[in-house]
Amino acid sequence: MTRILVTGGAGYVGSHTCKALSQAGMEPVVFDHLISGHDWAVKWGDLEVGDLLDRDRIAEVVGRVCPEGVIHFASLTYVGESVTDPAKYWHNNVTGAINLLDALTAANVPPMVFSSSCTVYGMTDADFIAETVPVAPINPYGNTKRAIEIMLQDYEVATGLRHIVLRYFNAAGCDADAEIGEVHEPETHLIPLAIAAAAGDRAALKIFGTDYPTADGTCVRDYIHVTDLADAHVRALRQLLDGGGSDVFNLGVGDGYSVREVVDTVGRVVGTPVPAEEDARRPGDPARLVADATHARDGLGWVPSHSSLDNIVATAWNWYQAQTQILSRPGDGSD
Ligand code: UD1
Image: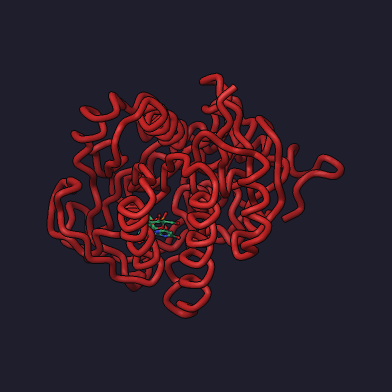
């Protein structure tokens, strides 16, 4: 079986991608330090507990596992924290990536899919963001993602490392079977917070900013189902394993929904209106981020099929109800 090293494979997008790899007949081997990831989310292959900051450990795992391909998710992802503690982000994200790339260079240089973010586009005015829109990140998290993208280009020149960069828009929703799902600590994302508020488990949701230049004054985002994201990773990896060249793809649906539209959908799906209050803008939030997904459709044959807002919210709500049972099982993820 084709063995794929998945750094950060115990996390949200990583674990859904491991399931998709397994369904595609590949064998994921997860490398994760389990600080933000969860051991219970590793179900489709071995788990190597380790930190990318430990050069010897990642070199040892790469040397022993001999992966035919790599998907690199492992990353810190809190935009706000990256602003207050940039050193933590540069150190973890960029040094970790260097250690991984050096380990791959010392091995057989397997091709890599890299988990990047639409945050690299910063405050663009483009209504639909294509890969040709100039990148201009506006926070340290985005800067580290962009730095790694550049690093990959430089390593390719020197080592032949073929790679595909996937820039996600707003990853959302959960596995339809509720085997795995989204668990962040702390949780900062709109949909899980709105669900928890509707379920009565959290105080009212704060709507960050109601004076944006959008139809209803709240921010517009392109929500993409995590199962569709996982599928895109498998397609990108297959392309590289078949000898394809390096590329960059935006992963979004191409439809934008406002915060108020998401809140209304959550209320309808859960069956209880989301208690919500208007609040000030959150620093660094662009008014609108919506993908032009043409290149992913043409280049990867990728057509999102799970990403209607109703299905995103329904699967997230299903997971919200199921996770209480999963997380309370003896010996299961306490982190
Ligand atoms: C951000 C990043 C994205 C990154 C992701 C990682 C930007 C522009 N986007 O997504 O690249 O991959 O985090 O975690 O940096 N909102 C509320 N109330 C809340 C929470 C959110 O109104 O309690 C609003 C936000 O202002 C935003 C929208 O909901 O407009 C979505 O927010 P969120 O789910 O946090 O994702 P992004 O910030 O868009």
